[in-house]
Structures are given as structure tokens and as C-alpha cells.
Image (cartoon, rainbow, N blue to C red):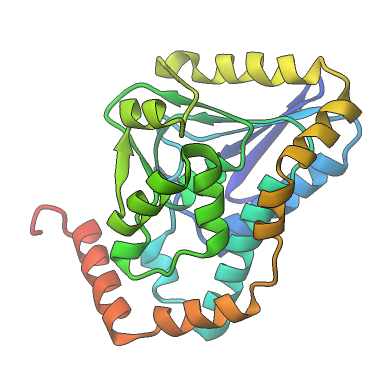
Length: 256
């Protein structure tokens, strides 16, 4: 694995996102993360999962500087796997806790929202979904996942605004469950996931999937028609212009 690290100890798997300083999501990371989560789910010697990041960053979201330059097949593969990653995490039947170590916008937020519980480091960090302002169509499955945690009204408004929340806002709105000192995030995540793991596994798992039944219907739905629309929008002149402006700001922050 080139973009993630996997450590399994005492029946608990910890996936650490490990791609550069900010863990930006590219196609390779999606493929590796999907494979790792599926392997962990199928491993009878593993009872729970934590996904975490690095100091200051859980994941900065989509690696626009790389993804912008994907060709037609690569970008189709990227979005197909992005939505599959979301579905894989939401359908993960074992306990999963996100240890959010810092910034977690866009794709990072979606990785975290697949969890049963989220613990976020205190600090000047942001989390949320800002796809619309950068020209990316928000799939219904993403709206439904966001709504599952913060309610439809706020999800609707926040998505249309591209609102990114600070740590306290995210806690107040229920997007994260606990805010803790950065040094305690992983420890608290382990305590929480192991508390879940002490319960009867079959009962816990079936109850989780039942409680997510409606949500699973959305994230596992056929995406072919949506994908066509997303790809058409991705290649539009307007979206390419917006994305290029975002990339310019990322590469020349002082100038901009």
C-alpha cells in the first residue's frame, strides 16, 4: 500500500491515511482504501476499525492538482471509485470510528461520515462539503449521508452554500461526536470502538445495517446516469475554469 498504512493489533484494525502532508485523495488512495476496508470486513480475526490521519490533517479532500489532469477514463474511474468508497464505508458491518486529526473537508469529510462515531481534534480545523462552489455536482447519496448526521435542512443549506464548519460548529451540529485534544483523539477512538466490540458482534452488526437500511439504499443505488451528468459537468468550460482558479490559489497562496 502506497497511500495508507494498516496496523492490526488485538482484533482492532487502524488505517492511517498516508499520502503527503495533507492526505489528498487520488484514484490510487481510493482503490487502496476500498480494498483494505473490504479485507478487514472479511477478516474474522478483526472486530473493529479506526481510520485516522496525520497531525493537522485527516484528509484535505480530493487532490485537485492531480485529478484535474486525469484523462476521460481516469476521471470516470476516479468518480466511480469515489462513490464506491463511500458505499463501502457506509455498508461496513463492523464498528468503525473516525479519529479526525485535523482538516477534513470534502472527500475527507465523506470518509469520516461513513463512521459510527467521530472524534475530532480541537484546533483551527474545518470539516464539511464544499463541492458545489468548485463546480462538482453533489450526488444524492452524499446528500443522504450528510443528512443522516445533521438533518436534511442543514445538509441542504450547507451543501448549496459550500459551507465548511469549524470544530465547534461541527460538534454543535452533530457532524462530530467529540472534540478532544489532538494527543487524545486516537486513544478515545480506540476506547469507543472497543466498547462497541465488546457487544455481541452479530446483534450489533445486524442492528447497524438495519438502522442504515434506507441510507444503504441510496449509497448502493445505480450511479450510471448520475455519473454521466457528473462527468459532463466536470469537463464543462465553467467547471474547468473554477477548478483552475482553485488550483492557482493552492499553488500560489501568497500571490492570490
